[in-house]
Amino acid sequence: MPTQIEWRLDGALLRRERLQAISMTRVEAEPCVAPSRPGLAQPPAWSRAADHWVRRRLAMGAGAVADQTTNVRLERVGEGVHHVVGGSHHALLIESASDLTLVDAPLYPGRSDRLLRLLSERFPDKPLRRVIVTHHHNDHSGGLLPLLRGKVELVVGAEAAAFFQSVMRRAGEDAMIALTTVADRSELTLDERRLQVVNIPNSHAAGMLAVRVEDLALTYVADLYSPGRDAQSPVLAREFHQAMAWHGLANGSLIGAHGKGTQPWTALVEELQAVHPAWSIPALHAAVPEAGSSGAAAASAASSATTDKD
Image (cartoon, rainbow, N blue to C red; front, side):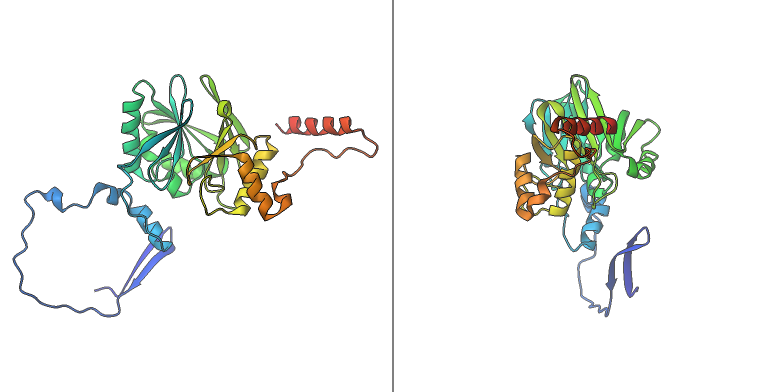
């Protein structure tokens, strides 16, 4: 019998169990009879599909073993935009005239399969043609593979390109995947809609993206800030706000991969001000006017600096 069992991922220790003593008690019992239907002896399919997630949560000292394949719901937050909820991690579904775009993959493949069935029933004439993944962490990319069937565009942060290329190689021969990477900011045109996809420099994950639906002035954010959630990281929230303010997009409303519902951007500003008054002020990257310059000249310099950046 082993005296020590370890679980590792890419060489990093996740969990270690030591067996100090083993005792066995012999009892008289009825002979073991195999079930008449072997399928009854199998654990639920969702538990096998979510094994990597369960191990990760065990390593963190937290539990996440509940089935998240039967509770997929779409909550409408605007014309043609739905919050994909029901589990511990959310996504955003965006309709256009001809197809669907999903921001963030579900937690694991079983939940993705259920979502795809729901979409085929709800939108039979609109295929899923685009998946935007905010970042590579497995709770936002674990269910990606089932979404990469057929013809689909995958949009990711430039710094995470190598990771997602490795995922694409496992997608199968029938997959026709176009990989789009965003290094700074990119505009996607979905028929009549426009999305702004912004790469957010931050302390949480390389290649983090935020997605703004222009016609609704609605921004989807994962982990850096969680609208409707009690626990927040002011440092990450500040990084998110500063980056979006630099792009002139720190307005409208917010919706996230955690928490619940939407929230006006002003609520985020107020939370940052409560930490420190200066935290809600975006960094200025405009040219500094020379001494004696008029206010109009200074404004012109700021406008020129922004135009050159874009």
